[in-house]
Length: 118
Image (cartoon, helix red, strand yellow):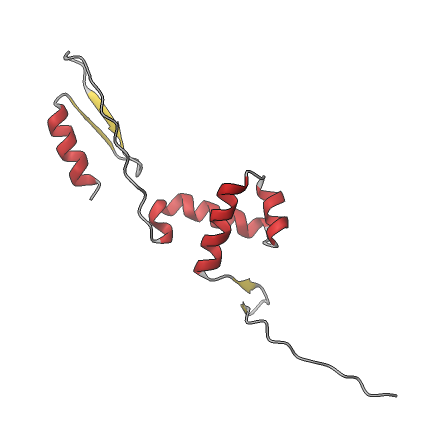
């Protein structure tokens, strides 16, 4: 029997006790950002990127659950000026975090929204 030449190559990938690859926060953020721009279905994108479909779904659901600050970047607050006729109707502002502010006085609502979005 002849000799067998082998080589051990360290890829730098971290794995858990079950042998699954552990992705760092930077990799996860990069994959999710690429998915947002791709326009592909989750299964096609996961296959293209070499990420398990279930892992991608988990990352996406975690990001939705934790909100836009999940990756350390607060979502930009967007405001649009509106002219509302004066009447007895109340105003409603829906914030990205799910809070709804209602009232009749636009100045008070604006002040409250400013405090809540800090």
